Amino acid sequence: MKNPKALFGGLALAVLLCSSWQVARAEGQTTTLRGYVLDSACAFTKSLKKPISAECALACAKAGSPLVILADDGEIYWPISGVTPARSENAKLLEFAGRRVSVKGTLYQRGGSHAVVITSVEAAK
Image 1 (cartoon, helix red, strand yellow):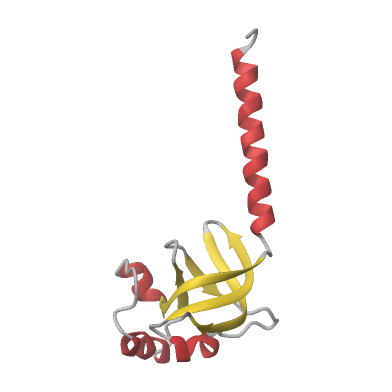
Image 2: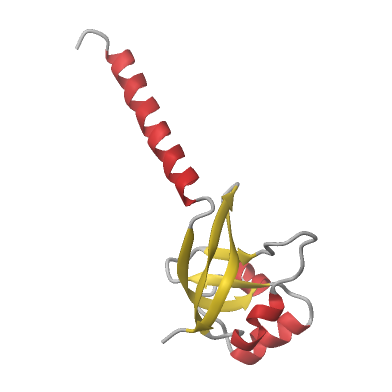
């Protein structure tokens, strides 16, 4: 090993390029998520693994709290509109508030946040 700094720098660059490719590949990728529909406030402030109840999630959503999907891997996905001007996506999820779902859609990531443009949602089997 003639120059360990150069070798380390090369390895670091390779890791960075590979991880950047993974993020770029995930951006706009269509997939299926499985998890719970709950209101965003409880998802963050209570660190829930699943909703307290369907009634609670529904009451929060009707009061204006955006619904989110707490995926099985613990990630929170914000449902976002795929049209402009954007609109709330709560209507798509209201009937599933507090329940486990299977969501098909297009994933997006930015600054550590995860979002999904929902194409279909159904109760998880």
